[in-house]
Image (cartoon, rainbow, N blue to C red; front, side, top):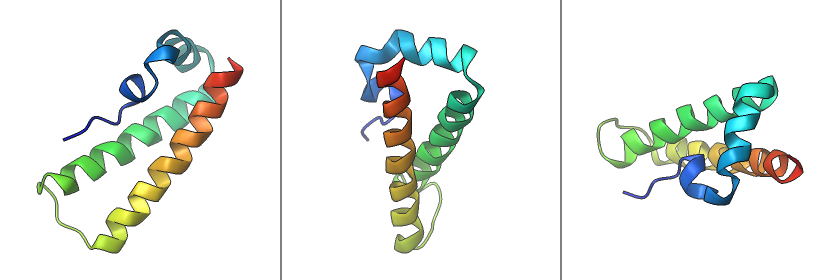
Length: 77
């Protein structure tokens, strides 16, 4: 199973991720939400949790949007 946490997705932004988590409440909120969604997707994909395909697709879409927003913030940091 592929890891999608931000440190694996953007290893070049490791320091910025840490700095923004501690200094930017909006980034921290998005970061936490991203990881909640990511963990839920992981539970579904590994069979630990059952759901409709449509729900899984909506979660994946939400993850992409969160990741895009977080990436934009990291590039500006």
